[in-house]
Length: 245
Image (tube, rainbow, N blue to C red; front, side, top):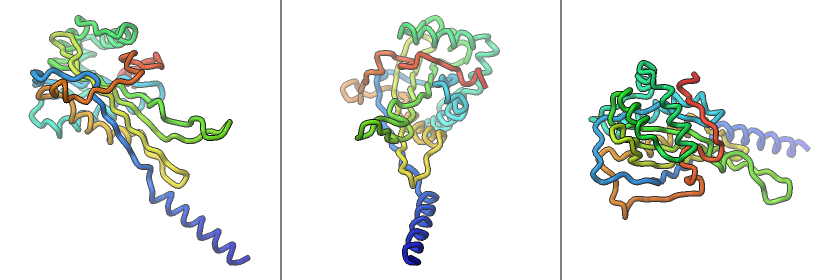
């Protein structure tokens, strides 16, 4: 009896140690869906306020700053307008509503309004505009298990969609989709949203075509079903994180 109790106590203690010391492994996958032309050269770039899925509003600011830091490290000589300053310039130019209207129209039609893109470029004072959307990955959360009525945990998942707009010509120059997931067992600590964001942003930043895109035949172009709705995916909802906080 004493041996059984000792074994149970040792097992419980081991579980506590493992739970405190192990964290869910993070996996990332970043795919360019719209390669940039090889001739593209980006000298000035503004990171626009993030668009986010409902429930992720509080992470919009930190995600934008994470991209800003990653771009500064990757391209030290690049002139970058951080998202907080871009928001201030949009507000001063009374163009925040223009941004919201642009996103809403993009959601509905899948086409950028060149005039509105140019207006944003003028407002923030940068030739190129980086739009980021933070969303939940479709595979995140719970899903059907092996048995009828069973739900199994599929882990945490986020998706970051990055688009580079030409603020002078009013067109989309480049687009990429980054997925980051963390699958935790019962004995592992789940990752925070900020950890997932900080893991994937440097990978996306390294692909922003500051010095031109890859040759088309070499670009890792991969499209999924969600790409038929270019901007908002299945949710059809949009919140401008910076405008709400």
